[in-house]
Length: 452
Image (tube, rainbow, N blue to C red; front, side):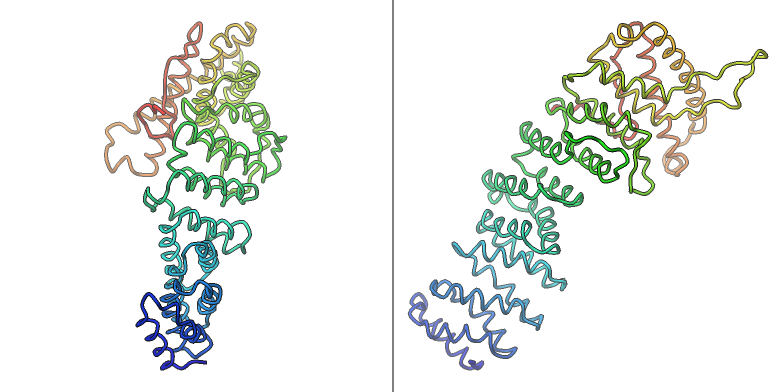
């Protein structure tokens, strides 16, 4: 085992030789043997091995293995020094291996060490992005759980910080191809992170790129399978995938496949849905997602049948007025409860899909059913007007801070919901129904039209 003095002497031989350092293999071997020494020798070896690495391609494996031993040393200061120098080994064919090693080192619980690994990975990314990605994806596909988790997080946070000259079209295509392999077996959380990674790629922000992403999500959602409303995994996966798909839809990227699945499989089972997510109104969540997607639905094969399912579900939330007794009072105990949030979603979805079959209410329903629907609409509209008046009165004259109290925030949203329903009901009262009004769903910010 060489001493500190011997390490310095051999360092001097190599440094003085400059470009002919490769002729002094014995001197480099002494430096490699420094990893077997004490703390001081190891610290010097951690600095000297990478410095002359390029001159000894025949000792590349020995040099990388020696540095790797130092990266795993018990002494944190030696580990940090060794990790800091790792990018110097990332030349030619060695780069993917260095990337692989650095990815494994992401499992470190020492924050300074972890930051060094991140910085080292970023620096070799700028040398060869594809080679670095090869190392990262290798560990994501085959590494230990903690390494996989941290490698995915690294990609989701760091890729967007890299300059355009690093993130070329070829590099982005490689990320997409490798991501597809990973997506064959991912957890819900991993899926969300990969969608964040892929959505951030410049090449996937085109119409065809977003279409590719929608197809990826549809595959993940497994829309070909039979829907089981009592299987919480099945329900939660569908909701998670749909949430990822919604921002991708536009007038050019259609939501038809998802809307069809929701109408045919989810709506008829709405009351049976179960979820493990505490405090989530699962039925309202489903109806909100359907409403958001319905604006971007393209041509649907079974449009009439699916409009009928939407219509039937809408009737469930739009009660008939209570029967009057002979004295003119309600024969029942109390007025039915009006569920405005549910009705907003269902009416909006029906309004959006109804545009594609404008004679549905007049030509596809019999006179009795249409009359029943008009009575329900009228009764709901009456209750709506009373509630709108109450809300407006409660909010009258309130501005700024007064509107920020929890109670008033709820009232402001309630006013948006009821105003939306009011506009949509007026359209459906027309003979034939009109589908011309546009409303912004109560939970969405008001935005200018998206030209995508």
